[in-house]
Image (cartoon, rainbow, N blue to C red; front, side, top):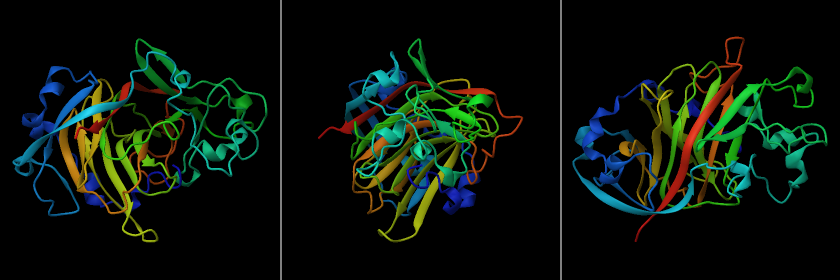
Amino acid sequence: MAVHRHAHAGVDDLSLRILAILGFFSALAPALAQADLAAAPMQLSLKVTTDSLSQQCRRLHAADTQSVATVTLRRTFHDDFDKHPLSSGKWAPHYAGGADWPEARYWGGDGSDFKRKTAWNGEQQIYVDPRYAGRGTTPLGLDPFSVRDGLLSITASRTPPALKEVLFHNEYVSGILTTQSSFAQKLGYFEIRARIPVGRGVWPAFWMLADNGGWPPEIDVMEGRGQRPGDLVMTTHWRTSPAGPVQSCGFDFMVPDASTAFHDYGVLWLQDRLIYFIDRKPVSDIRVPDTFEDPMYMIVNLAMGSRNFEGVGFVDAESPVTVAFEIDRISAWQIDP
C-alpha cells in the first residue's frame, strides 16, 4: 500500500489459482513447533530446504524437501497483545511518510487520507485511530483496535453516515499497524499467529516493505481472499533493476479452518532464498531477488474492497457490517550465527 500494495496482476494466474493441502510437510515440523505452536520462544529452530534452486520460485512438495538443514534463530521482536497496540511504541496506525510529510498530516486535514489507504488498489476503507480527525481538526475518537484475553482485534465497520464526509466518503473505517520507524530487519523469520476473517470485500494481510520507503520489494506473508474461506496467498514482488518492471510470484494455499482456528503464517529470509511457512512447515520458496538489499518492516491490516486482488471484490450490501481480524501475536527472529 505504500505505493501499489498488492499488484497481483503480474503473478502467474495458474499459480495463484492452484490450492494445496498442507499435509505434505508434516515430517518437516520442527521440534519446538510440535511442542507448542502458540508460543513465540526466545530461540526457535526451523527446518529449511538446502537444495539448489532450479527455478525462480516453486511450491514445495515432498520430493523438494529431501535435502534439509536446521536454522536456529533468536527473537528480536515480539508483541503478544496483552495491552493496546498503540500504547507500546512498537506500532504506528498509518503508513509512515518522509521529511516532506509533517506529522500533523497524519492526524487530520485535507489530504490526510493519503497515508491511511491505498487508492490504487481500489480500497474502500480508511485506516483510523483515536487521534485521527479526518478532514477536520478535532480527533474523532475512532478506535479499530481492541485487546481482550491476549488477542488483538482489528475491526472494520461501516462508516457512520454522519462521518462519511469528514472521512473522505469511505465505506468502512478499519485499522493498520506498521513497525516502520520502530523495527526493521534484514534476514530472519517473521511470523503472525491469527484467525483470518472472511466476507465479501474482506482483505486481511500481514506483509513487509523496505524500510527505505521504496516499492518494491514487497513480501506478502499472508493475504486472505475474503470470498474464498480458507484460501490464503503468499507472494513476493520485486524488480530485477531499479527501473525494471515489477515481477511477482506466489501461490495459494488452502487452510480449511483458517477463519475459525489460529494458525501461524511466516517467512524465513535467508541469504539465497525466501521460504514461506504455514504452522512452521515450509510450503514454498523463491530465490532472493538481487534488489532485496534493505531491512524490511512489518505491516498488519484489514482492508475492505479491492480492484485487482481476485477473491476479494468490492464491498456491497452483502458485506459484513463489522468484521474482525483476530491476532494472537506477531514476532520476528534473527538468524543465530
